[in-house]
Amino acid sequence: MRDIALNWEFVARAPLRVGAGKELISLKSPVDLATIKISMGGRSTPYIPGSSIKGVFRSVSVQLARSKNIKVCDGVGENTCMTAGKQQGGQLKKAIDEYLRQGMTHEALKVFEENSCVLCKIFGSPGFLSHVHFMDAYPVGEPTTNVRVGIAIDRKTGAIWKKALYKVEYIEPGARFKAGLRATNLPNYAIGLLVKILRLADQGYVRIGGFKTRGFGLVGVDNIELAINDPEAKGLKLRPLDKFDSQVDLEDCASLENGRITVRGDRAKACLEKLERVWESARLGKDS
Ligand SMILES: [Zn+2]
Image (tube, rainbow, N blue to C red; front, side, top):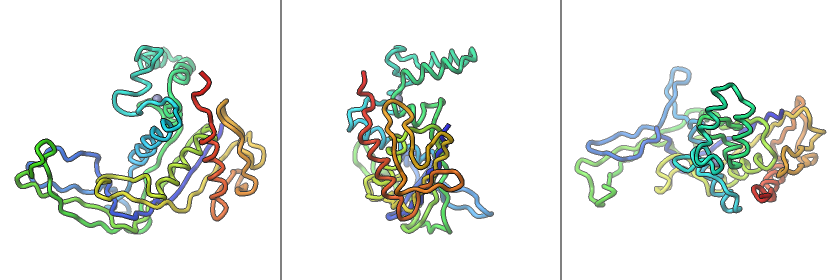
């Protein structure tokens, strides 16, 4: 059993808008699009739900995997391994549900492992077995919010709606959010994939939240910390977890803290690059 905690901070470098996930479909009256908020210490403050962050990681992962010619499902909508499992004729979910109903957990897991793509194995399928849990990201200090007024355009005709002004609430650049994920039994290449997405976000290739086409959602990624608890680890070497995985030696860039292999601070970058290289070199899905 290997437990992983990956923590980092998102710093908004552009306006950031995380809403309830609704599209602007009907704008018959002026609409206020408030950022999603949570009550903390008696105040209402914006935050980034873990589910939003997970959605970003999953969709970027799909692109990254496909660019390596790894066959993966969309993870959302119609084309998922659960609904389009090739060997079950689209019935993987039914097969799993049937096993679970009979209390045959081991068989359910086996049929899932054999018939789902690497991203479903890492991120889980709707309602089944996620190895990664993304936590809600809460602000450090009090983020400043502001409101911008937009004009709604009818997507079909391009015409401006009558009374179509709407107000969008957003978080001002500079706001900082503590984000993180917890994972169990994640192979080294999967850690590398997650780390790569953080690097791409920091370099401006991955945006968070809504209104991305209007320049929103650019974030920096600061203070990455990785802690791995693996009773079977030897020193600072991360053992491979499956046949696609390879060992990573973190001796020159990590330390042991409370029995955990810990990566942080100035030396973190070297370790994170090593993990990313495992993802790059993993020959996933190339054995059949
Ligand atoms: Zn899948």
